[in-house]
Image (tube, rainbow, N blue to C red; front, side, top):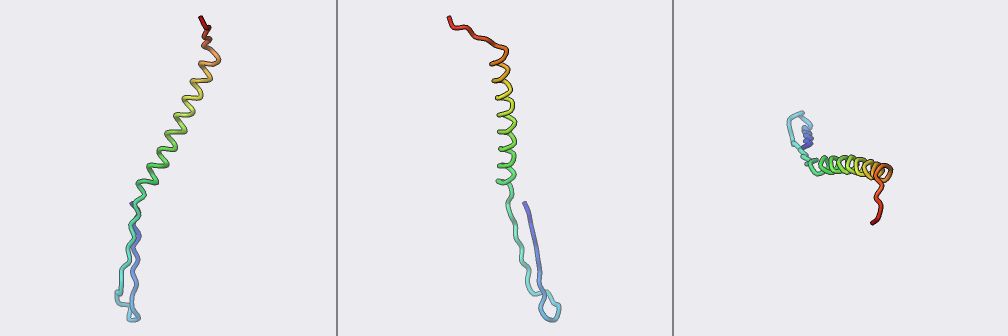
Length: 61
């Protein structure tokens, strides 16, 4: 959660208003995590496939 708060004063330097913004970044963080997980999965899968292709020979019956 990202929170930003700002305030302003009037011409007599007295507090006039408060503006606050909250941004839920959970979905962005989840998307980044998912992309990283997919990248690792593809690396493992592609490496395994290349190993099988190189070292495991299947002969049809």
